[in-house]
Structures are given as structure tokens and as C-alpha cells.
Length: 114
Image (tube, rainbow, N blue to C red):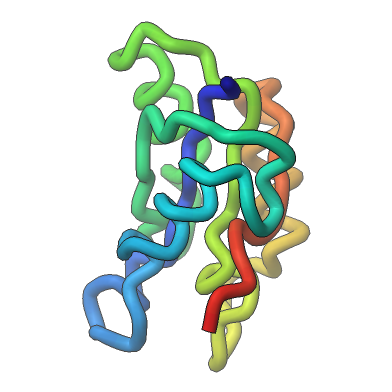
């Protein structure tokens, strides 16, 4: 079983557009569905706060405080497919930023549930 951290869009969470922290990401991780290649344990759910500069640090601190190194970090489907899109950085840029700062492998999207 892999240990994962999920990063969700804080603006979506706070505005009620559809919370990336709801059951969909957790269900997909637990069952190994969607973009998870096996059943996974969510060790942290990080809220990306605009403009996103602190997200990599928060991911790193989440891993440190949990004392469990994640096998992967996932950007939630809601963050990756946000409409309107993030005005600060693309999902590709955020993924690369987190990977460069933490050394953790970052995947985009968690699930395709509707």
C-alpha cells in the first residue's frame, strides 16, 4: 500500500464549488481507482492557498509532521480541472514546483467520478 498526500484547491474548498477534500479523492485512493495504481493510504490532504507559493513547504511539513514519507503527491482532479483555472500557475507548473522543492513524485488528477 502506498502512502500519498493529496493537494486540493483552497479557493474551491472555501467557495463551495466542489470540495477536493470530499469523498471522491479518498475513495479513489482507498480502492486504488482513478489515477491511483493501487490501494493507497492518504497521510495528508493539503490545501493550496493562493497564490500557491507555500504549497511545497506545506507538503514537506505534512510529510515531516506525519513522520511518513509519501510515495507520491497527487494534485486533486478538482485542482487540475478547475474552471476558471488558477490565475497564478498551471497544474503542470504547480506539480513541477512541488516536485522540485520536495523531491516527491507528483501526479495530476486523483479520480474521474462524476
